Length: 595
Image (tube, rainbow, N blue to C red; front, top):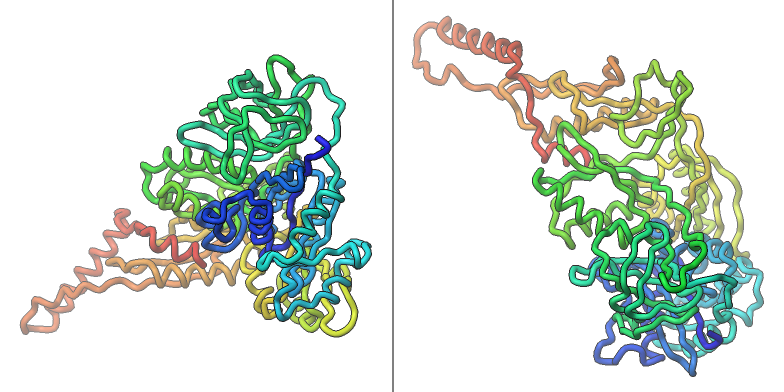
């Protein structure tokens, strides 16, 4: 084990993690030159297209007689859970900072995760070849952040390959080898998994004690499932069969398991021949922050969607979902996500990888509702909110928010956060002198963050601001259910949970959106937004007038009036007999949801 080094790269989004990983693979000749391409570890089409890492990706390299196991991680705050799982499988982390952008919010967030795992940190400045790279200023920020010396900070360029060999040597020298653990029996930690149509579930594992061989009978300790190892090996970055995984190594295990629920990330694999006495602690359960209803556009796609979501759950452990039924949209799922980008990527993967057309409801957060009878429940959708008379008080999630921005934009950021009900905590300066960048610490309600806050932050800071957040606490709030009534009937799918003071503004927007998108009927349609029995916003869609007098060719005016009166009575009768119900087309739902 003394020649094994397990490490990962952590950084803010777009600081060059995947490009640096490319240079590692080239320098160590892990991938043939003819097979080499940009961001080779970003194997998902969506990752290549958007230029972001969504999934962690392990790879094994050989350098100067040492085995280097690298895990490339995502940088966006919505995929922090992927980073935390990677950190639990390694002993060291390369902290990458863009020499042109400096320390960003997620740089700090990921650093704290690595320090919590007691990992060895190697600070590295990337993109030193850029004309606008400010090496001295960024070095000062890193020294301020880590308390290290200037000579401890390495400089490299993932694009040109400059400094990459020195960085690999530093990893060998600084990152400790895996340590011998006191344990009885074989223990392998599952830190990731995915599904193959032909081979079943493939688990990515870190061997913590003992070894696993092809043909051995294994037990998944958390689910008590048993199977036989049909293939075992390492990622290079394609799967390479070895027949055995030794202690301290990172690789994959294929057991032919087809039941997706029996292989869980964080579970421990052991052998029936040399079973472990206890399973590894695994990972703490992730808490979803944003909830949305996901429904198939075609009702008969429900089973296909359930199978697709089971498969996505394998490779996306932060995803939570449960069945839900809507009067308007039929059977679907209430899904929990870590943020809006997570929701966006999930929808896109359903469309691309499984060919499903879906309808998503308005995203909301989870509220804790305390009832007058002393009970408590978690409300994730407007339909679950009890009557006002039975509610004592409601609590909403508040986040601890770090915003990093050049000091010239402090005023703009403070105005934006105040408008979004944020509370100022403190300001920390990353460096001194001209062009100083600051960290602004706030507390904010999550409901303010999940709409367009990130886009507005980028606007008011001219693209230089960055954002990181984590759950802080639950606080009392005044939230009401806003019902949308069409022709005096409540439309369940359009109901929302909103702050009391925002109800009129949001209700007005939805009513206006419906008026623009609903087709006209033979009668006037009332469009209303209401809280309980109180209407807070309303409008009217005028009737489509059928010209019943078109067939007249002269005669007395009373003939015309008689026909119009007959039409008027017919419309009243239609409303009275219940034929005045309005069928809302999917396009109208989508117009409101896109609001």
